[in-house]
Amino acid sequence: MRIFYLIIILFLIVSCNNDQSNYSNQITADLISPKYPPIIEFKDLIFNFDTVALGSKVEHTFVFKNIGKTSLLINSVKAGCGCTVLKGWPKTPIKPGDSGEIPVVLTTSRAGFNKKYISILANTRPATNRLYLEGFVAGI
Image (cartoon, rainbow, N blue to C red; front, side, top):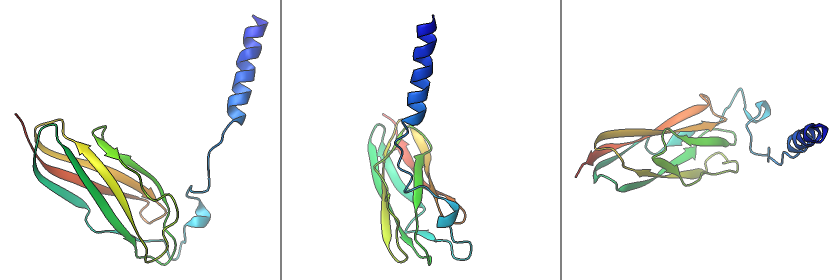
């Protein structure tokens, strides 16, 4: 029984010390300029995909620009549901005046009007922005 407890304790120690996370892209207070926070401006906040067949995939790329005076860092992008897949986003700072893209794929699984969102957490004010995909899904 002692060996079992010893193995558990060793496992916990190793797993706590084995954190290989890269903290270089995390948003910290020193990256947010209180006077001039970055400003993220999207080409479109809502993508209307009109009418598609049930089960089809809708692909769209949200384009944005940093119109602020300091570098923009996107910490995370999360889908509001499992039917939306994120294809990535810029992991490095976006300098003032530069642009970036957030490509997404929505798999339609429910007939009728659909409106799905993705949330972007960045060093902007407000810190969270939402983008929407909406349209009508025609059932069979």
